[in-house]
Length: 335
Picture 1 (cartoon, rainbow, N blue to C red):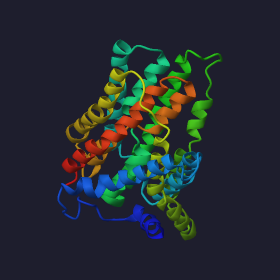
Picture 2 (cartoon, one colour):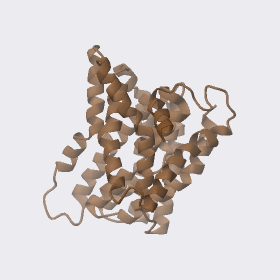
Picture 3 (tube, one colour):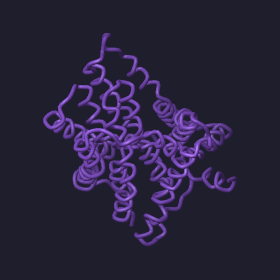
């Protein structure tokens, strides 16, 4: 296992692109990009099923990824780019526009076809558009496009959590039928204290200062950030052990369709027809939109004790189906 860990330590600064820059056949996208990624996730799932690491393994590894490895990767990466590279408004408009359109369409349909409380409608919309940008998207983009995709990948992870997660929290706070106390700002405060947001702000401040990081600090963050890709995928596999597929089949099917088909289609239109993004950015945006539903949706549903079974099912089904849908997309977009 030592050689495998060593290989992943240098993954964030790996410059080669599996089928993009080297001229490999497009058909190799599934074998060289998608299958290794999901194989690590599957390895985590089987390890969890076997009880190899104990009942708390998923929570412990998830905390390491979320609290340590990913913040270190975000911080050191953003400290090395200009602030203008992060605030790429056409790219932000493409990602945010696709997310917002998907959110509003799904909520509008749910209001008529799957009526419920405001909290349920908000979580319905979030489930339809919330991509697993951190745990699956960022590793996938790094493997597919190399280090050039790191900053746009981080942007995708930040915008999903910084904008749409708080929006769903506000709706859940206002519309939760079990609410027996005044609306609390604590969930939003917790969002602001998110390690990823703090690392983003800190990295951009270092970048804007022009001083850069001391070499020992940069190496420290590089080493911790290098653990992100395998640990994130393995953690996602461990988490899947406790998931199940239950709930209204019609609504679950609709949400999976919105997540894996409608969301990337809207984003494709914005990327290639409206904002006309350059380089790898349009492909990165579409792939981020086509990712399966992220685990934070299920966690938020648990917190508010509503939409739990349905969000859980969408996470499981969309993750399984995305092996196929992402393979097709990569074959089309990675030239």
